[in-house]
Amino acid sequence: MVSVDKSAITYFIADLHLAQNRPDITACFLSFLKNEAKEAETLYILGDLFEYWIGDDDKSPFIENIANGLLALKKFGVKIYYIHGNRDFLLGARFAKKSGMTLLPEIETIELYDEKIVIMHGDTLCTKDIGYQKFRRKSRSWWWQAIVKSLPLFVRRKMAENYRQQSAEATAVKSQDIMDVTEEEVVKCLEENNSQLIIHGHTHRPKVHTLIANNKGAKRIVLGDWYEQGAWLKVDKNGFELLNNPL
Image 1 (cartoon, rainbow, N blue to C red):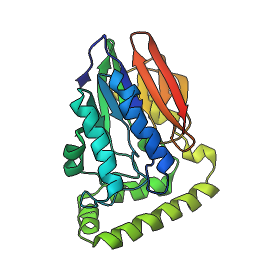
Image 2 (cartoon, one colour):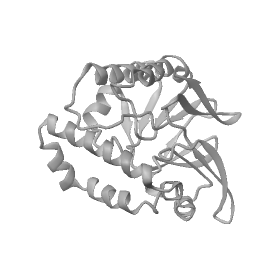
Image 3 (cartoon, rainbow, N blue to C red):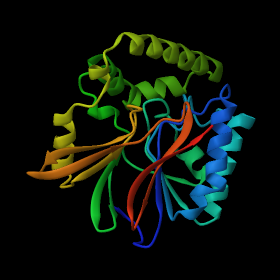
Image 4 (tube, rainbow, N blue to C red):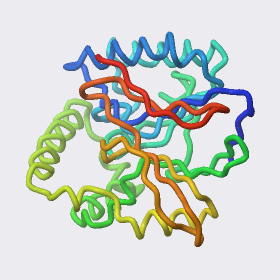
């Protein structure tokens, strides 16, 4: 479990989907790192920082720029934690070290202002999306990742671009209900971790939800995506606040 100083500010972000063809999102993120994030003791990135990640050996000025921005924040004294998303789950220890991030397991509990909180990307909560969950199980296996990482960089890039297109096409025909979380799975996760609060991304539907878990009131906070604006959750001694800035 990760604990945070009671007087500190903590930020949570997810679903930035950084890509070379969206310099506006990159600029907004780098501005966030240089300004708002420097107020914090801790920054949690809950997955899909990148639109896709094909391996730590993929080097470009775009990727180096992101790594340098994160590392500058780390050197400023902010702790940065990262949980893999469904688009960048191949991000590894090499890039994490270069950017000053600490990798966390897919489900982590933290203690914040005397409250135990579950944090995760959120894709495992969407159990009605059977096709995606089947792909997820395969793509997280050691053998699948070993095969993919052994392919030439240009092949991996083409695979990622194809997957992104297929994912967009599949999403267009899926119902909103299928792509959202299953409440029973949220309750199960909270009860397994003896918590009354869960924070996640993935669904791109920022909101604070109320529910019942462990036979008492609980909350689920969903982080926003960065397609149209920068979006983050600020937590301090005054409580939780979902914020955003225009790109």
